Image (cartoon, rainbow, N blue to C red; front, side, top):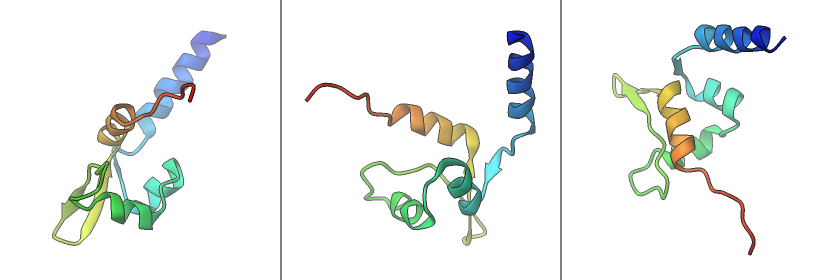
Amino acid sequence: MSLNLENAKSEAIITQKSWLSPSELEAEYGFSKSWQAKARMKNSACPIPFTKIGGKHILYHRVEIEKWLEENKMNGGAL
């Protein structure tokens, strides 16, 4: 049974798009477009990785977003 689950996960990863638009990033990860715009600024405390195509179109590479999430996660702890 777990083998089928692993196969399903692998197939889902293969069929996922590599590049996400701001709308797709919002739908999949929950980051609003306004938050994304703020996080793209150079002076952001935690700048999100992105690519700008033709000086206008913003795209996010899924692998870079996953890496960024791991690098910037906060572990909960006692106060």
